[in-house]
Image (cartoon, rainbow, N blue to C red; front, side):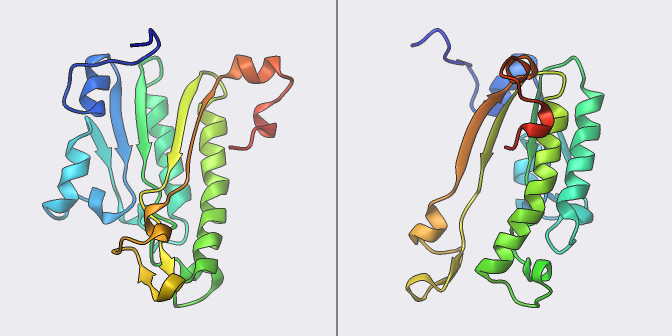
Amino acid sequence: MAPSTFVFDAPNLLEGLAHHGYRTVCVGGVTYFSRETPLGSVLPSMFQQDHWRPEFCSPEADSTRHQVDHALTVADTHTGQPLFLFVNVSATHVPHGHYLGDSTDSAASQQAALAYADTHLGRLIRTLTRKQPWLIIMCADHGDAFGEDGYRGRGIAHPTVLNVPYAVWHAQPATLAAHGRTQQQLRP
């Protein structure tokens, strides 16, 4: 095993990080984080601390702003302690037609929702990485079919549902400054 490999003796990543002194926190967006049902309690119960509010959910047109504001408050309360912060952005989940002023969801409204969320995620990353390094992992939980091969929705095994975007980078203020880039120039 490479010396840089993170190894832990725990049943999952969250418990492994907790054993290494990390505080694990989620800011949920979709109702799978709401604790309103048994299913909605599974994911949040895996974290040491969880947060969900109706304004974090996709029907709220400014859900990502609310989530990012809350995530930044959470991060401020854990300054000086290793933190695993998970933000489940709900804006790209249905319904998202309202981002185009429509009552129906479409590929275009999902793209508009993503563009909206991106502005707030950029603010989250710029603020978090201003003073300390962060490992940033961005990925989707699923795609959506909008008529590809005649399919619609997400509950199907189709490439548009199964193929999801993924990005990882280590943002360090010193590295950014050394390369002549400011936080304002950094676009995740």
